[in-house]
Image (cartoon, rainbow, N blue to C red; front, top):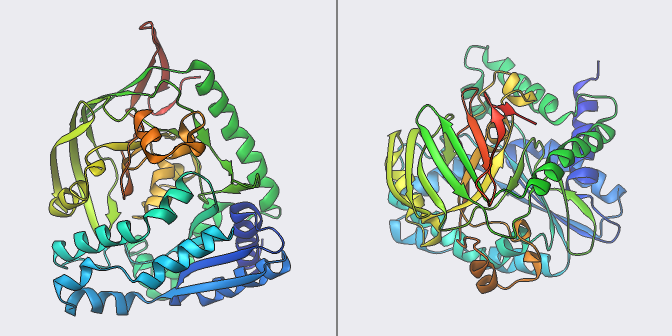
Length: 410
C-alpha cells in the first residue's frame, strides 16, 4: 500500500502530466488555498521537472474571504479586481496552463446576504469573460481538481474524530482520482479510452433529442444539428491533450438553447457561491427557465438564474452512469467536481464551443446562431439516480434506449 506522500506525489504528477499536460517552456498558473501549500509545492516541483518556464501560485484564504463577505459593503462586490483580469488574460494569451484546486467549505458563505454573493458572481463573470471564453473553446489547457480543507472534511466525515477527517477526505480524493494506484498515469490513459467508446457511439447515433424520466423529472432536450459529444481528454489550440476535470466519469455535449421543455429535479445538493442549494426543481419552456423551487438556498438559485440573459438557459447535458466509481463509493462530497461525476447532470449557463462542429473557430455570435447558449456563468447541477431512464430520439422519431435504471443501455 502506498504511503500518503507517495499518493500526494502521484496526484501532483497526474495534474501536471495528465491534467494540464504541461509542456516544456510553458507557464503554469495554480489557484489553491493556504491550507494546501504542500500540494502547491508538489505541483510546482513536478511542473519545473516537466520544463515549466515559470509557475505562478495564487493562494486563497477562506477565513479572510468569509470576513470580506461579512464586513465589506454591498457596493464593493460589484467590482472585480482589474489585476486579476489582466493576469489571467495575459497568461492565456501567452499559452499558460491553469490548475484550479477546489477545497473551500461547501457552505463557506452560509448566512451571508444573497445580494453580496450574486453581485460577486456577476462581477467575476464579467471580469473573467475573455479567460472563460478561451477555456470553453479549449484555446488553453485547464484542469479543475480538489484538495481537503478542515471544514469540508468535517462536513463529509462528521462521524469521525476531528483528527481523522482530513486524512479520510484525502484518501477519498486519492481513490476517486486513481492516485492511490502504482501507475496512475497509465490508469487514466485507459480510463480515457473507455470514455471515448461512449463518445463515439453517441456521435454515431447523432440524436435529435434526449428524453429524461425519473421521479420528479420529465424533460426533453433538443440537441444542436451539428452537436458533438465529448468526454475525458481534450486538445488545446496548440494540439496538446489535457484533462479538464480530475476526476471525470462523464460524456457531454451542448443542448440547443431554445429546445428544452419540461421539468427536472435535483438528486444531490449543489454547493454554489459558498452556500448549499438542495432539493430543487426547475421548469423549462422553449429552453428558458420559467419556474424554480428549492427547499434550501432558493434565493441563491434564483440569483444564479438572474445573472444574465444566458443564465436562464442550459449550456451542458452530461451523462454519467449510476454504477460508477464515485457513485459506488456512497460518499456525498458536497463538491460539484466529484458529485457531478456520480450523476447525470446539466449546467445552467454557457455552452462549450467545442460541442458543435468547428465551434472553436466561431465567434460568439456564430456560436449563438448554431444554437449554443452564451452566458458569463456555467454551473452544473446533479439530476441522475438509479431510477432515471433516458431515450434518444432520432430525427425521424425513432426512440433508442440510452439509459435504463440509471446506467448505460448500450
